[in-house]
Length: 128
Length: 446
Image 1 (cartoon, chains in turn yellow, orange):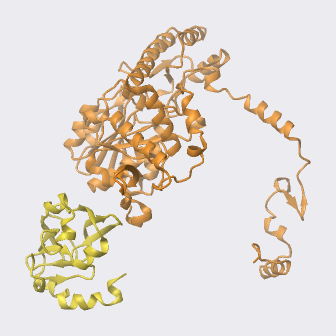
Image 2 (cartoon, chains in turn cyan, orange; image 1 turned 45 degrees about the vertical axis):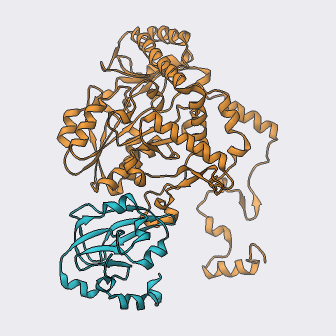
Image 3 (cartoon, chains in turn brown, cyan; image 1 turned 120 degrees about the horizontal axis):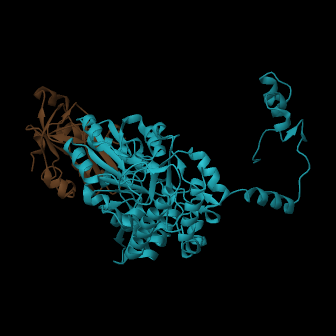
């Protein structure tokens, strides 16, 4: 389980931990409903900030998952590939998706803190 | 509210706004003879009675030579096979015939179950993990396979054998905005392995072959499969489903995607359509597979039920990120194929395929009785074969037609190097008597 205060958040509802681990927020998992499939990126895939790296599929629709910051995929969570429901059950724990080798540690500063994300959720921009 | 709201006054204003005085000025460039009316008056001649219309139309229809009324030795992608009466009897029932997008599970359990059975039968026939609910035809199924390969591998080059159906290849090229298509050369009527090796590199998304190929010949599937996979490319096979009653299914020799034209499975030649695109693949590509998929599930009471599944890949949900733009299928034709396969069963399909195989050999012997006829390629074949003829193929066909026989396809239009060759087909429909007549008619050609 991640310490939520140490996470940084993207406007597209992904979180990233200081070690580069990426997942989706609790708010996002509720919105997409039951996740039935995850397409994880190949190891070594490079992504720009906000570039699409993975796909989540729920009973409702399929959603792109973006890299919160630029980096290279260094690990993927095989457990969620087998049990996608982990994303709904533990979005900040076993439901993580992949890990990024963050290109520039400073880039994390462009993201929101938990408090800022909570505020962001109250705005219309959070619900396109 | 009036449905058509513009009044005479409105029309006058519209016309004067664009500077003309009457509507007919807008259509001046259409010849008067082609117009239904001019200045408000009909220019058509008086009509004729329904009885006269029927007479004229049947006289026109009588000019056709339907396959059933001649001895037909023409195939090349559309085949004259026997259709058990149970197929038209069932598929023309109003419940099936008039249903449009019959996909709502609450209203269409029968159709959805038939689709599910269809998928199961087709996947089994091709030896693959999964099949979709069908596509338009064999050509578009092959093109969709190319799209899948490009999506899956992130590569752009599609290698397609020149021995694949020429019209299928054209359709693949038409689909090919996101990829480049290269053709693998022919060698003795088959895909040249040497040419294939020289074209394979890290940019190839897939290698596509047809077997039996357009010239009737069986390809070396296992060898081509190894070559494709060795380069990290997918291996795509288009196969006549009837031939699989006798031959190894593509899934057994490594196909990642196997497709085909389902017309031989109980569907009339229909002047070229509607036909039935068969599409099967490995489980790992199921989310990249185009088209609809019916799945088996349980309802609230735990009873077996059927519903479309994996729809999140489709365009009505995923918009521009959809797997493909195919949001439909050939449901009625798929039903025909399902009934056909159920009626024949595995043994019946094998018997039917065996008859095709044997009749094609008998027909080849008959053709070779002709003066100046020779086999074009010494290679194994199923129910079609290519021969060369000293007499131009078109003249051969004219002579055969006089004897009530539809001859083979002249190949020159598709393969310039085969100007003197033609492709004959024999199916279970060709009786020994017809085959003998073919031999006699060919002998008379000088």
